[in-house]
Image 1: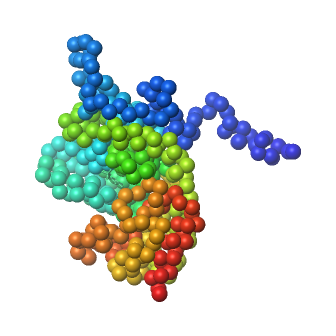
Image 2: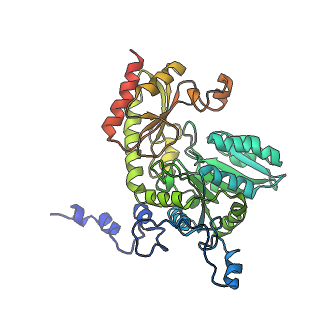
Image 3: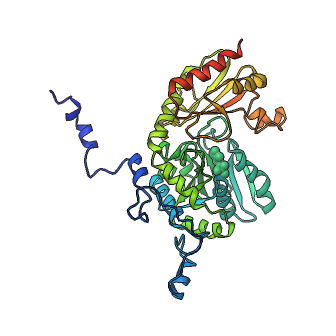
Length: 407
Ligand SMILES: *Cc1c(COP(=O)(O)O)cnc(C)c1O
């Protein structure tokens, strides 16, 4: 044996250094256990209220951020454990969980902005977030400017000094998996910056490392990962999370302990799930790129993605979502989603089952062709959320349904 054998590889030896920081996959398993006694599985604290030992304790508990044993809307041991785990994975001081991803989005936007303030947001963004910015913010006197997130410097150029309070970004973004340059976003001086990192999970990217102020997730998706928890979460500095908590206690969109328990359960396997979804998605994207029924495939891990270099710079793994356009438009889209059998037609993403969506015939069916185009959705746009089935089965199913389009 020579020094070149794996056992003697100095890089491998360095990775086995017992004092090296633990990998994210390991931390996802170990985090959020402080309050778990000797139980290995997450413990469910269903109680909405707790006995207060003394008047003095009560006074303190009513004002302590996230006090776990006072009243459910303020904090809960199971929910706090989920929050602690997310803070650990994102490299944040603190986190606050919500009843849904939109609970988190609305707390950030309405909790941080006031009448007269200005927000810069990207055009390519989750439809719920877009509606909140477009329809709700104006009612509260909050002005919003939408920019193209792929245009270098677009966010900073739209900032109005002294007026812009918040910059709202999402990457990889709905619906076409456009990316935001996190380092550029993190370097914007003045307003607070927030990234919806749902598609990437902390295993794919960690926006706070780039100087972004807040990261949020719809944990309903890959973090909980089993389609059985409605959950959102925001992570950032103690100061910002304390401020958000003050709003969240009044907003009342606090996470349910049951969903937080499922969220924690999901985190334990996030490492293997996300790696599997990312590797199957890359194989699938490569397999269907160039298929005659497909006019375009968008996946950050494909060299043909317009921002592939950026993806390689800021992402460790590219995730399980693929966007594709069918050459046959609306009719092909309907036939394609009805023609798959492993991949099922359902909204949501990040779970064990491969899912397909066809926005033009489902979520966005009421939009005119012009409105569809403005939302970057073409009549043949399909989104695939790659699941955990055997990659060969997923790829064969999708290709089979594509092949059938030309019959
Ligand atoms: C699903 C989703 C949301 C909203 O999350 P809910 O848990 O459904 O409220 C927000 N952002 C992104 C990117 C999402 O995919």
